[in-house]
Image (tube, rainbow, N blue to C red; front, side, top):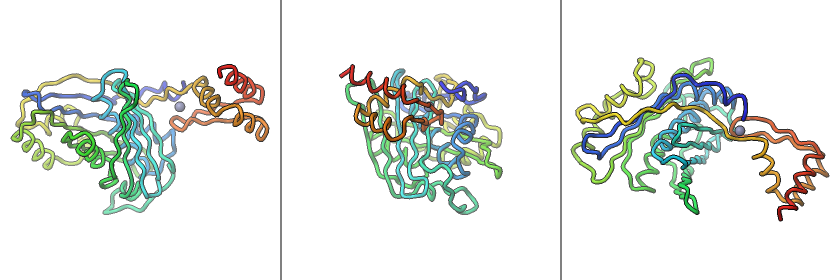
Length: 303
Ligand SMILES: [Zn+2]
């Protein structure tokens, strides 16, 4: 594990509530620390920080709906300069992610960071859920706006037929640092109760954006209280959140072995060594010629 993994992201956590009638679940989280950590790892531009931060937060909210041992991966591919955002999260509250072109920047729109301009409003969102079954579940939808939150809500509606509302926000200072990040996710569970859903939609329309709420000092619990105004509900618990990458030298070795003996030999002949960088945490792994030869032999022995 990389040393970056051991930096605690104080204060990042997720809470959830259930409506009294058990037909609506609500989750909210603050992710300021881990989004700032992602910014430092990847050296993202201001708009890329906002885009990646929203995707990381959305991934954590989606991951929180899974069972222990399951994982979710989100792949946003757009026609904007960021190209791709990849995020992986699990229900234990860990997340990692990266952007293809982290330094790409676009002009502000209405004096705000233009996330959909950076990602692009044309493209695909692919959601891959590893539910511990033989084959992972995969759903693909077109990007709706490229603003991330709407795209995830659209995915749930189209691919899983679950009516959902999401709010995601990242506030990036002029100096590039992330000073507020978080989000909420509300899902209607069957049998849906129309009156409750209408009230929630009305509440969500009325509240300010997530970054405004966080910058006012509101906690995730307060955000859910505002969203659930007039709907009786009870708490379901709290979980700490962190940016973590489970990569290791052994995992990278396995990737190299999976290239096959011919590819490895080519690497040995042409470069005489290899430096592999983990895309998620930027950890570097160096391999000497001798080590590459040992991996080639290991791969051949296994076949
Ligand atoms: Zn890594």
